[in-house]
Length: 223
Image (cartoon, rainbow, N blue to C red):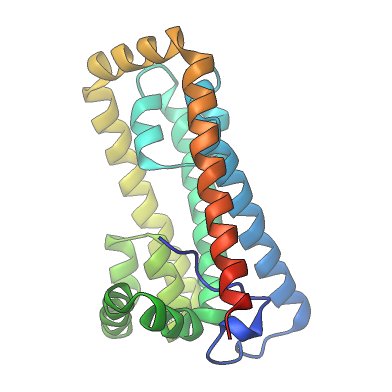
């Protein structure tokens, strides 16, 4: 899958970003880059972190699969206390990105990946029609971006995201604890092969990021 257009490269964008104060725009883009980086680092070293430092893993990359697996051997209240704020802050940043580049990103998707672009268009219509309640039901990155793009009020959006993440995180932890007998077996298996599993994961994530960077450079070089 290709990465979204580089916000700093106007040649990759079919339209200019929306006008916002330059400092706010720089802060949003900086935070997007920061969260992208730490998520990639967390995923790259996820086998080691999952076994040895699950709380650090969730602070870096609060993915549902990591949360469910970590529930087997970490305090669920600490996992909850780390995961919910981390996700809400990242989703708030994504909302800001949607304010800046939502229409641009959708237009780019339509040009590069028509099926995914059409799906985003459909989600955009649903977000415009339903507003914050849809964010409560599906508090994810795509809908957070679309909420910013269509102008869902910030307070309503953040409230829905927070409540949705509380429910989603609690459900994931409950599910993870139900399966803890089996997930502990997986964690024990990883612990016996920790170095090899981490090296393979880091290599895969590194190659994926290099390929994404190559695709962006190739897109810029294309007329």
